[in-house]
Length: 161
Image (tube, rainbow, N blue to C red; front, side, top):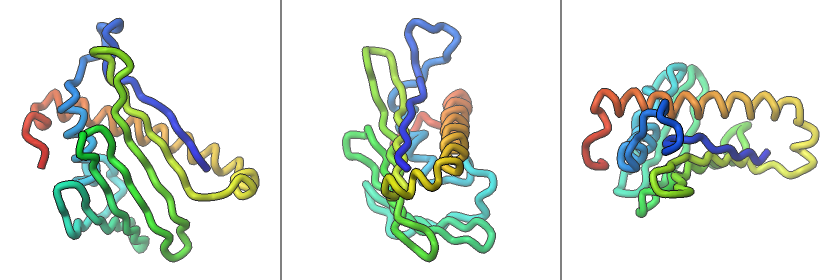
């Protein structure tokens, strides 16, 4: 299943949206990777391994289920890439969160999911994939809402770690 959607962050035409700076947005996306329990309350534990300036390996614990992934931060501070290698019964998958700016002052985040399945598998899982799309959209909306709250609290004012 390949799924992509965009969430508007700033719209100069909509005064009801409290704008975020690009830096606040970037710091929020990095924080989602480095402190995922803030964004996923059902996550029991996250252990970070081998952090570098641009990558971190993670081990995510959901009860008995443990998922290992690697997160890469774009040096231009535009993209966060999650790569989940195949493990156990899980197929390889990826998620890219990309900051986009269609015009000055207008920011959005594009979320691109790829579970690595071919078209035939996607067709066989069509009903399940609709549920996954809905769940991904809800989780991504929650991510942006949490980033907005953290920015309003002044928690996204520091330098990128």
